[in-house]
Image (cartoon, rainbow, N blue to C red; front, top):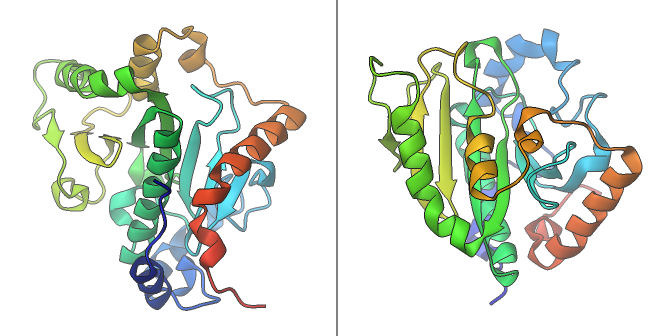
Length: 261
């Protein structure tokens, strides 16, 4: 069955962020303006000249959907990104957090029609240094989706040695209440089901490719898929994005947004 954004969900998003205003224009987001000195160089901020517009599939009110600019784990490997500059999703304003969830619902429905499952991953690493966070969305075969919780559970429990100060595996219910702001962490969800998180104690030794390594092994992909992200040629990137737009079109809730003329 085709997924549709409910009228209530759309009204709720637009009420929280009035028409014509970006996430950075509301009161809470002004806290992030101290980072403006680095935003000009950010490749994820929606207004940055360094954002690769060829990757963008659709733009919401506070967030956007884009294909990854590298050779991902799948042709529809994509990211959900806040328009404004945040270094982790637990720092998001409520309206931005809610909108990130709407994208997930649509992607799950789209991939379900393709008989695929999916994994959502967030690597909030070096949070205090102010990188721009995004959530990776990776479609996987159904059988991989069924086994993914087992593999990630094992990998998280075995990471960072035996003498970690914090509990290694957090079974997520509301990530915002389970990870303190300012902490670096890795989080993974399986479809629309809750997943796991891990508070990173030693950022220098925790691989940025942690989640990719697990999925590459499960999907029997070449190690080059996680060892080196090579940016795609612009023509191939555009082709990949256009193909994604075509599949996403019937699930595209952003077409219902009332925008300023």
